[in-house]
Length: 182
Image 1 (tube, rainbow, N blue to C red):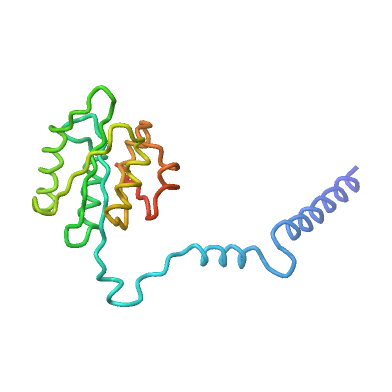
Image 2: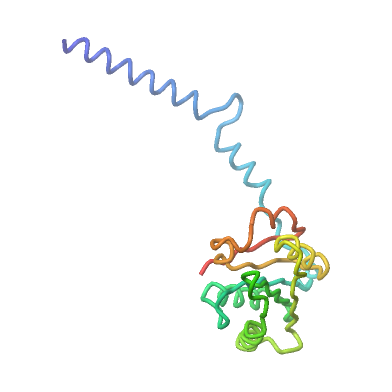
């Protein structure tokens, strides 16, 4: 009985070693090399010249908040946008959070106040309201294209509460989409 158990154990160990070698290596190329090459292909090269690094970054901040005094995710996105936007090139796009309440005057004044708290002046604050008949993703993509935005910043709350479809927006945009968590 012990002999059968020992031979079965040896057979299992040999099979495991053979299976492991077949699974984790490809013909001619180990798995680590393939993963490394794929990661190198996806990395974005840092700016190589001073001109590229000094190029102004225009950030489009999307605010869609039911709270007229801004929720924490919206404040975090606003802080991120003000830090990233060189020379204060930050534009806020205010999206009404529901169809019944399209009045965003309280939200406008709150966003403008928070811009001041983040160190941006009133001249650096631009505001956009989307067309009433446009879908949010299409309106944001059009605004980003018209402004020549280099980045679109969205609070994660807008995506989590289904006010904005992030995968759809990412397909329309010609620039990176940043979803800022709380």
